[in-house]
Image (cartoon, rainbow, N blue to C red; front, top):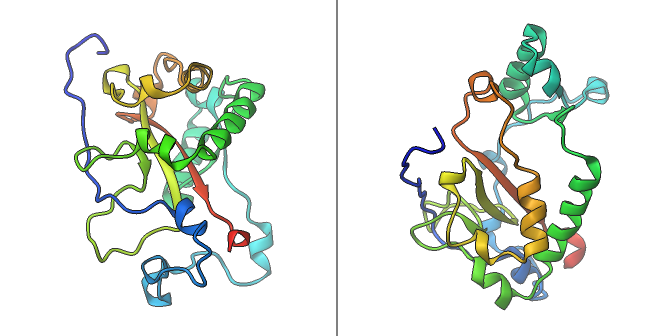
Length: 206
């Protein structure tokens, strides 16, 4: 229950340089730590023939899920099992709110690094700006920066991070994470909702 006392879960991750800042250094090549040998990469699961053009990202209907539609629940299961992601429709969030948040998020990522350092991860808390699940100094890294933030349940929100956001952006963020409809946690066994924005630096920055 949300009113019950809960201990905020804190994950750890080794701090690494910002990819956005690395890209601004006019590098002649991508650092070795960000290059994955072919044998180190996930093997492609898509058919390497004309059938690939018939594949579409799975679409899951939230209204149908909450109504107890068994077929829609099976679609969700298969999307998670075979794809790892899906497009959610009929979720009740106005598209204008989503677009506004996307613009504000891009503006936030474009802030000077000195400003973003206020939101940087710490050695004892994975939430914040940086990368996640880095457990070794030799680990291969993704060529991307992200901001990792728990928004629900409220008891798990970071008291260090959320108050730092400018009020308009904070309001937009929280408007995307209203309390879930009754039954959603029994339908989808999730302990936390995470809202993050990944910024992939495109090759044109070199």
